Image (cartoon, rainbow, N blue to C red; front, side, top):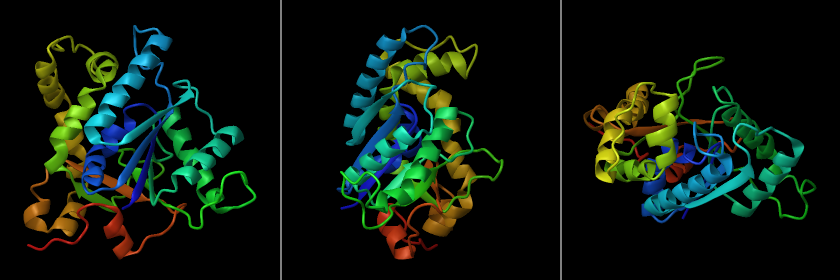
Amino acid sequence: MKKILVIGAHPDDCDIYAGGCAALWSDRGDQVSFISMTNGNAGHHREAPDKLEKRRREEAERAANVLKVSYEILDHDDGCLVPSLENRLDLIRRVRKSAPDLILTHRPNDYHPDHRYTSILVQDAAYMVTVPLVCPEVPHLETNPVIAYLFDEFTRPAPFRADVAVDIDSVAERKWRALDCHESQFYEWLAYNMRPGTEDVPTRSGERLLWLQNTWGEILERPAESCRQRLVETYGSAHGTEVTFAEAFELSEFGGQPGEEELSALFPGQNPGED
């Protein structure tokens, strides 16, 4: 059994970028934990922050049940996360208590400050989790966990490098159902903020899920299209060229450096395919 810790900035980031792999991991018996560094209380155009925070915690809990993961939301306000020493030490303690084999998080070059600072906090905590005299009240880790970045399309100062690409077509429906749980985001806030003029969001649950798939399908297909070569290398051309939904990850030099055997054990479906 592997321990996987996904650290996102907001209570839907983990689901968007690693929900498929989370389902695959949980299905094979791994322990998967999601952490949202902020409470998401600014992600709306109408809802009061206190009510929104409550909603988002409830939404995350429902999504966690779909994916069969644990989901923890920290108390930092949305848009206010900073890479302070206090936050670094708190994350060191959390990582040590979780003792993950693999940590996933955002890359540090990202449009959102909460995403960037989540990444910085993970990087700053990385080596320190092995140092006994830092946070001595929590036993230190003997080895640095492997750290990998979640997929993005930003190019400066460097574009995303797909070191790992995972076919999630077999669990895509579960990922959609997990995203469907985040009603305040996909059917309200993001429809308002990212897709102006989208006033046709259905009110019925079944129709909403179909709308979500039609509206966000192209976005969630991008990792597979962007990382097609890695999919072909992993699964073989016959399989790799047919993958619709994939999740991709870039290994971080700040974490442990896995060999091919360890990498295959950490990520699902990583035994090279053949034509």
